[in-house]
Length: 181
Image 1: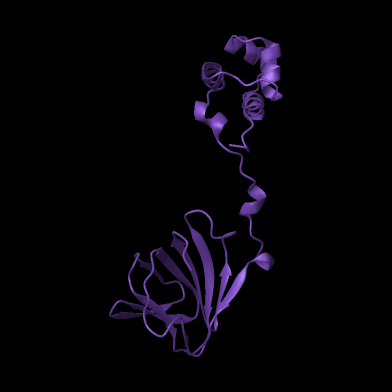
Image 2: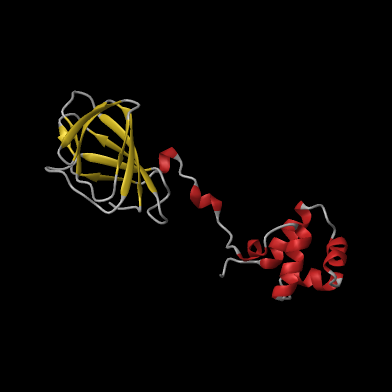
């Protein structure tokens, strides 16, 4: 709740609607000075005032109570990706981090290497897409060869393994929810 500035949101919605502070104050039946104090964070509006302002601005009341998101933390530059090596596999995180409900990474599997000795299961559901090369994916007792452009969905707790018995590296883009590694 510390990133919520109701006044700034009122001002932002007012300006987006093309209203002056006097016009909004008149519509909301509050004084222009009260609206000014709300917008500057010097006064806290009552719930009933928030409801009236929301109606006048044609926005849901809850929109004043949503936390601000720092969008600069949502962008990941290709040269700033977090990478990790597990055995001989390289994982580059495409999403900013492992917070939230979804993580996306690029896995590189060198020729003649596998993700593990035997198929493993984990809590997260995955979707994977082959960007380069080809790879064998083991799903329980079945084995599939995926080539560039192929994809696979791996349900939560399904035993699986990646194996690259081929002569070129395989590059797989995958998303997992919830994020597990």
